[in-house]
Image 1: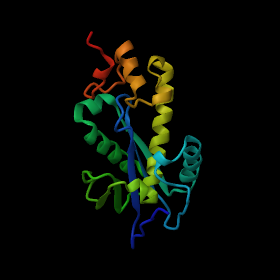
Image 2 (image 1 turned 30 degrees about the vertical axis):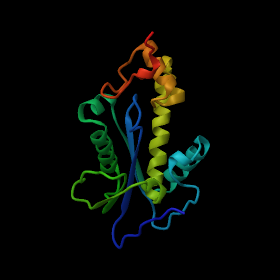
Image 3 (image 1 turned 180 degrees about the vertical axis):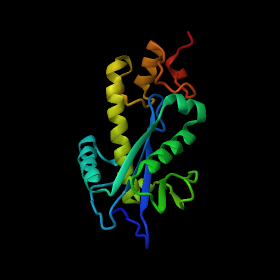
Length: 199
């Protein structure tokens, strides 16, 4: 069962991102503030849930959260400031859009930059430990998957509706076959040398 931190005063926001390891599409971050006595045993790390479970839980989170928000950083910005900074920027944007300003922030991962002067704590594998981070991971994952499915209709040659922009063997092959587009991250390793042969 995941934990829910209880503060003496104020509210805690959990934040997480999706798409950091992709080679196409934006990085997406979500921030969530849950009620103090919120409990939903099905909520866990989004990577451990199937699509049907995630979208079911998204409805519960959006209905019962005190507030939530979702933000993106584009591939162009990722290439400009690097993926770590873009992930943090997306988290900051999400926190800034919350209708309640948190008094504490809990972050999935091991690195974060201060937002205003709000105290924060990084938690490695935080989405497997804390409800608000797991809830944020679900919202971010669902939003990004939907985004890539819609984008796939405009760029069908990359099968983003299936690979969601991750560096699968098929995706790398399709890049080699069709070249790259504006939604690929140019500073990432887009081509797989193992797909070429020296004859």
